[in-house]
Image (cartoon, rainbow, N blue to C red; front, side, top):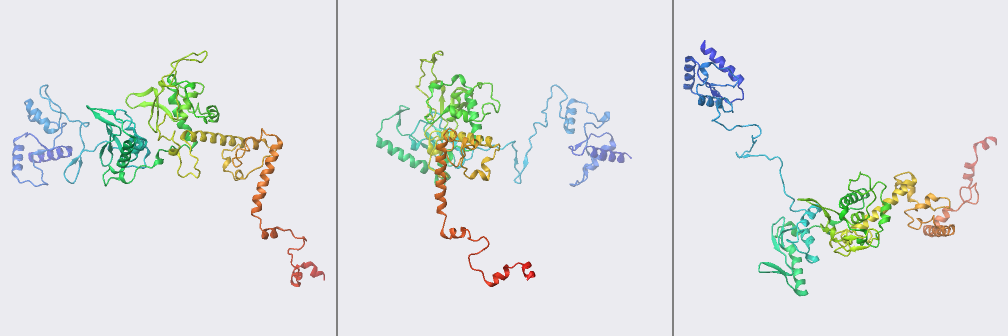
Length: 521
């Protein structure tokens, strides 16, 4: 009977402690001791369970005889049953919680791999078509203490296009093959410091020519940057889409308005001759300055200086370490930094507008302050390779033209009442403006050029002369398609009853007689 009770107790404990660590339970009676000793003496198999190994849990009730008498026995017992707390103030054991458990992945080789939350990969090492990576490599040449200006043929953009980054003082390093090269044209070290050395023009040209070759040849033989670099048109800015172009312009404008107190005066700027700032402001969308809602730093009326700098590609400078720099601007393409305080007059008489204390610099040319390879300044960089015309324009000129075209299309859509006026089939047909059709003559037709834009201001005689000239052109063009056979086919018959100019035959006369006539005969 005691053996049967012990078996039941073991089976009950086994069911309750599934998943727990099997531990040996202290004997409670002599019969149990005998049973456990006999079970230990039997040979064990992988599937057999020793009789003395009982599955116990902390919640299992114990008899008073089974309780340990000393703290050390109690601690050892708690360790066996899985209790991880210490019982005395002096004895402390390390606790294990869910938060500090590290899950390890099993591999066939037997090595455990600890999975990370997020696999952090570095920037790509070879990406000749990635514009963002080109800008990132170009950003490593910003510090003047590490890289000094070089001639145009070996400047920082030429090295960045071939995968080189600035890796130290006048030193470049390839991102793929990790080759390093020192680039010095007119400097040498004297007593541990670099000093400029006056060299002849022929020597400098030879050095520049040699470094132009090393931009490619300095890579390892199997380096991919040696075979192909970035395309010259990779820096080109996509400004042909009005929504994205206007959104970027508004963002740059807001950044500069946040630095309103540091912006130079309008007379401190020297804008290009073909930039009409007032006309550009009138061509912007009606909700450009209010949609989306502007920040509190924006003025109530448009800031001409901030808008002129934004049109030229400038925005507020933000340092990744210190945050926004209030007195500086930067270009996101060439990464040129511009100190606004250098171009603002220090003291101006508000009543008369006279400059009392001038600025350190005479004026600010927002276009020429860009670097030579920047598309805001260089029209060749902004040129579209797929364009049919060779009319090169800088990025700010393309942006101004986009705003002008968008304003014209918006005006035409408002007049017609349809947003898709240019997509209609009738829009491709040239229409001659009439004297009473003021709606058609106000804006002109995009296919007739700029002659039809000012028809409303011209008198009737000039308009009639232009109409005659257009019709004469159309007749001349039409005459090119007229042939002798075409004239014969379009010639009208002399008799309306005859369908052909040939004389009728007897068969044709018989077929031409109506049925009613035959019946009457």
